[in-house]
Image (cartoon, rainbow, N blue to C red; front, side, top):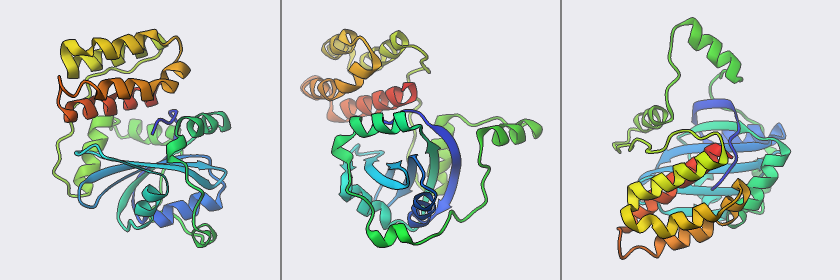
Length: 247
């Protein structure tokens, strides 16, 4: 799922997924939740909320890169008794963009009984980035990188998978975004990345790039003769991460 970057509200809390969504539903939350867990393999889910209602859900397997979306994905998450939950707030405008970009992941909503039961996350949390940064500064603790956070999640879930360090650097303008995507394509596909990069280069805005990302994915997957499916899937997952951080 492609979702604009949000403001961190609660990070790294373990417990039941049902408890997490009950609290968010009761509070009329708008934003998204990232859920990390392991059943047969390590998986990461994203759940988009609009005024306390779940509107879209997507899951990606870390190793196999398989995607599960919509009601099927929601059903899997509702069954989780042990997961790591991160909560991010979004503005109304960003929620609307996320809904537009993830039409295949749309769900009708929670079962009625789920939204009526109150509850909460199982631990007290630091609720704002400012409070978190102040405490870290006070005790001389460095904020972990995204890769380190991923590894901490895996360790918490007793997983044994290796996280590959990202090849791309943070981007702060559209030209840098395109460059980061093109460099990612070259890293994974080599010379045959030209056809993918031509599509990326032809985009004139981030909105157009997001709209045409399914076309980019299709073009990349057509290159399976020249590169393994795993390499292509890994590349597309990294591109989605880069785009999500930019938007």
